[in-house]
Length: 469
Image 1 (cartoon, helix red, strand yellow):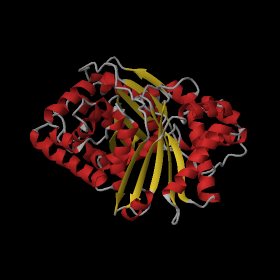
Image 2: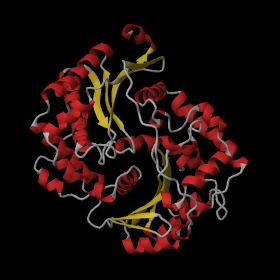
Image 3: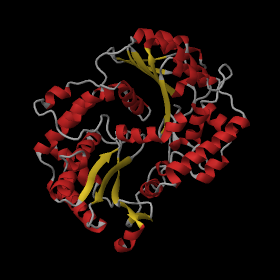
Image 4: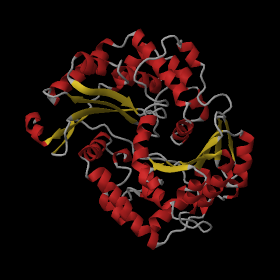
């Protein structure tokens, strides 16, 4: 499998992982564990190391010796939000083109070698980063490092390669976005939620702008951003820091800096007045749904303690079957088939907190929305209980343990954080910060950010649209 075919699938996974530094859980399963116990957890363990090669490449090693395998990732501090106006989709397009071969490696050889040793590979692009990874038996680590280092500096492209690949991207957009009412509405929702911010532009790009991308655009983007001083190598698995560093010097250490990308200053999202609603009706929609979104700070832009409090807030509000939204809308009220909330904490700029729900048959979107917002208003007026905060913190911190069971997820947690303004220490000490969140802090961030007018979206079957209007 290649990164091309799985890019959007990986993006969907990214949203789940990046909503929190840990994986979501459906229920509190840790009743006997104390918050103090969890607060001592260091994400990735005590042997995580970091260093920097002479060419600026940051190297992070996460030893995990439970199986003789390694997850090898290279993350670039560039994503769709770094594209120039009119060039939307370029970061994702280049991700496709990175599989076209180099001066030293014919097209397809890298993927073929990974497959021959029974490994897996993938690549993905987000608003803030682009990453490539392979998972192989540990004895093949040097091989994948050599190939990845090669395409960090030696990519070659021809019109014969670029033009058909652009058609592949256009077809990908057609299948995953243009033919999906939910995906089309999601693009509209992001545009309205993030005025003036590149986060409102789809990662895959607008169709007409994808059509205009060419070889020169791709090479210019590659030369500016795919340089070792703009990249992070993350290796998780059955390795030692010393061994990885030796191999990194042997492979990536030969790659010269080609550019200095400079600061990542993007236009800031603006808060505009008035009610903002988007809706889409389609014969393809079988189950209506609604969501509300608020602009909130990310872990990078937040004041101290705010990001952690927002994470606890979103968990109490809609983080699982014990959340207020699920209990009151799905279990007790029997109005909805699903309900929840999530907060995308990992982002370079201000980000979002989303509430979503879908009605049961016979319940209107208007009725369900009114009830969902009343739950939010009750939290704003009356705050949260100490018991709710303790339960959410235990659940979230328990997830920190579960997340470490998957080597690739662990590597992704560090990669997303390090490409969005975080640090190794900030990732590792996340449990200690969450453990200190108080009910007062949760209510404070709710009153500070959820009292702003939210942006609403409504996805409806064609037959129901008339009733809602």
